[in-house]
Image (cartoon, rainbow, N blue to C red):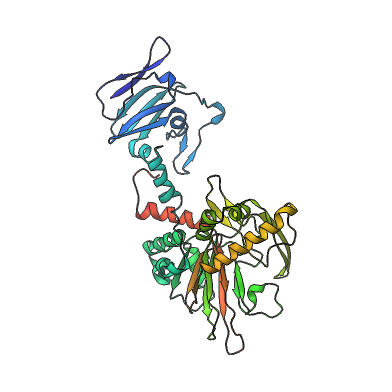
Length: 410
């Protein structure tokens, strides 16, 4: 084994014994902030402060709540190990604060700080890596899943949610002719995102409506509810009745593909759409409830790494107040027009049939609908529900642990 001891000079040094799993590189540990561990041929480093903060003993971590209970009011960020030993499949550490910790080898390996491991964790546990698509490739990425299989099989549920999260769109087929059919799908995941349109909503032709989505005329490409700061992440549309007339097809476009194209080919317009705040609004009455919603955000929202986290786009719901400087108005409108034109150019067309539930990412895809005829003998009726990505990713992780568990995840 490998033992670390304090010596008279008040420095820490490593004294090697027989071990293939813990070693140092002849450095003074007082000058280091990491513990070097060799795990199955991989040399891994773990910061002392991280190790102490993540002690898994019952004094520091509540097992059933899976939560840290370490008292941080007395925590020493400069804590150092004074003794490290290997015991079977665990590493045992004695600390300068008098505490002792034990770490499972696989638990440590799963949380290693190597770039390769962190990428793997991000793409498999945190969120599946997205794959962008052009409309011409839509049928290659548009996976189809059976309603009853999803309800009775965790494997089928996982496959649907995984494909949905990767491509931003997926289809459920053979749903029953019931206005509550989509509820059973939602309940397999979590719960709906309620908005001022209710727990669910009905999309059909309604004269004198307060929402243009309820008309049978052409519905321009958009994201739903961009005026919500906590915008619904996904949209589930269950086709109960489809128009027999020409039209009524859904238009779908992957904005991540469009944004990447703009970043490479139209960088100035891309920058305008990522940096210029726009005011999104909705004013009206629904179910007797008055609302006046306002939210400001760019069309393309980026995280601190420059990755897209949200798309906002809706011509009807874009407010008339432009919060930016007047000099940006004309350039922004040109960039906005280019963005819409590219989405049309790269879009796919798909007409759902009764029993289909079309699921799509509401903060990634633009969606629209072609005009259709509506009369007493030819109607179209869709039942819609919103579901947040938080619930989907949570269910995916639970299913992954259950179906494809890797040692050390929990």
